[in-house]
Length: 427
Image (cartoon, rainbow, N blue to C red; front, side, top):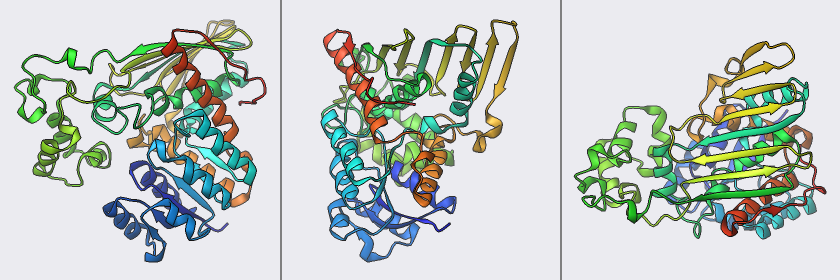
């Protein structure tokens, strides 16, 4: 089977990661790139051997060149997904689209309609569906190990330093330039929970707010930047501690350090913290996304789900308990505890043994193997022309995104939102 040719649209951390997975497994070849940052553009072109005539400063230039590849990886900033996705779909590209699908229902619908109109495969990067851990849970549920699924409790432990990095100081700190945190961070989780239940909920409520990372919580002695602050040595959100510590760990060079500086010396880090956004006091930023939120869902068969997203945790794998009529499952992203009510027996099922390098929970380490597995499935689907190799399509992703927007509406209005998902099959 020949290698799938790929155009990379947006050569940031996520775009580079998917491209490297594709090339690394030998099933993909990057033949074009569109990236506005000249440094990244030159670096990616050199890494993948892309000829100068296929290196573009903008996605519109790529479109103007005609179809150059079998498929496109779109990993631009969240609010810049719609136009390249629609235009490239119109040119016949199959699309691997970084989540979230788009920042609004209207734009996501345009993307889904373009995929259907052009009969192309479009996979939103809901990578949690593709992990060995998820496959294990789905298998146990399908086998009836716990009877009928009645209730789920699910925690997304964002991590105190990760929240400060991405959602206070970083690109996803504001709704007007990015999107609500439930969409940018946890559309993964809503999609995954719907994947487990096998249907979209019929009712949604939500509560949450920005409570800590605000000027009102700023200690009186704090400075605007960590490098000037007398409280920095004892502050849990110290930027020097976080980013200087990354220097000694090559696994953290690409992320999170790569978002702060290209340099790999203490002087490089300190210079970036002196002038850049990642050196700001977490109580003196312009962030407005929530730092904690709960979402409650009720499904058509009476099943319920409670989801919590919190900044005030270590950054770890998601933790989930699934309550059934005949048994109980409890998982932490690596192993699953199964309790059988009928016999009283318990079993620990370790999924790490089947996962590549037992990767961790974040984008830095491949979301527990999900990044690699999704990339592989997408390339196989494109190469074979078989969309059945993908675990979701554009219509399914649109349906799960609509649950996120319903939850945000519920949070904003203090209401319970009713959904009609009967016409959408979600598996």
